[in-house]
Amino acid sequence: MIEDLKINKEEITENTDFIIVDNIEQTHTILNNNHISNAINNTVLGTLSIFYNEKNGYGVYLNNNECIIISDSENNKNVDIRIAAINKEPYEVKKCKDIIY
Image 1: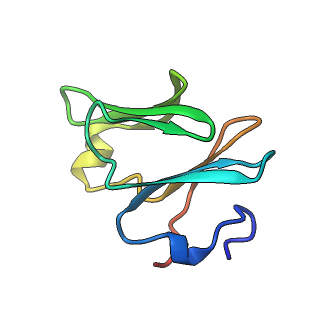
Image 2: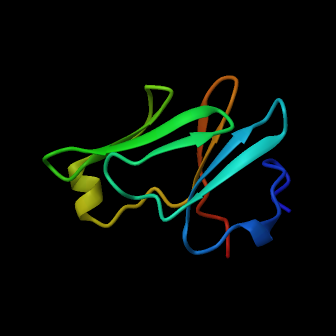
């Protein structure tokens, strides 16, 4: 169990990109293999979308609000979002590099 997210580790795989957490209702959505430009997904917190720019950077938006930005220089160094958890109230992004599948 990932205590602060109330998620069982068994739900997370090497394909998990995002964990969207409603920390008020204590529900979540796990998105797998989601690194596609123009990907749009319905989650417990609303619509999550990803858009790449012409310079190989990208942004992640929740309900049209920017929540993660990766610059082209970061992305060229193979920096990846995997795994980011986004909490509600206020939106808070946690980079979950400590999660082990």
